[in-house]
Length: 371
Image (cartoon, rainbow, N blue to C red; front, top):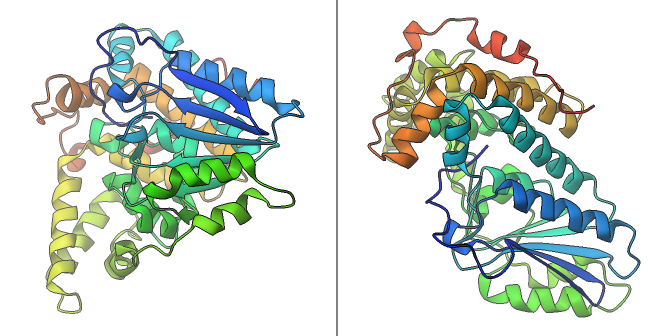
């Protein structure tokens, strides 16, 4: 669901957590918790829903821009501390409400009848991908850092992330989902998480152009006026080993293949180092989170649409939230205590029940995501 974030603002902000305004046919939504890198809470999700509801049939608004306040990013994810508190407190119903409302927003953005332009400038992770990744026009900058880092906290990608991962080229979906690797602008465009590269210095000009545009210029045509060619994506070169290793049937198989490739003379020294580091990383992450994530991404490839992927993710996250110790333990180790020493249960892939992913995918929580 989320990228681990810093504690929320020490005092209530003077302004609302989402700024909503409209001018010149442009509706603008600005996530407004910059000290928390605009991390999402339930109030923000409801404010975004309400604005989109108001503008859907408003003839004065024909385009929406989504951005974030501050210099650090669009959205670092969601409130994982609150999630850990709900899990530890046995408050499954509260977790269900949050996920249901968030996923409904993700689907609404994807299906919205008016173009939504997302400015994924800076950190855009977890729940931020759920907002930007399903928008009609997705813009990244030289400051962009995109990721689905849920396995780092013993969890699994959600907010429609598995739909995006499943449709990335080759085996990038497995790689990005399992490792939580961060993409820059070039990688995000290459992997299908973004559409256009616009330097951050040009974002104000782009916003102005979208507001003052002259017919018949479409939003895409205006964005192309500011679009530049990004550097070559590092992921394209890494496909030489990613596609090979991450095609293995299981996580242990992926790690084994990575170890083999780390000694392969067919790869450059840098690539061999990358395979070795990736194998080491996978050996440190939650065995349960890895196995479930691999199965989830691969099953999403066979699903007919985003709503189906969201429904699958909803079952998985509620399975984690109601029955799995790795999620609160991962949040403790990475976000709360920050000792970076999670005690996973089970601790190793060798000790993992081979049916754990199938059990997770079969889990059903009431009420369902889509009534």
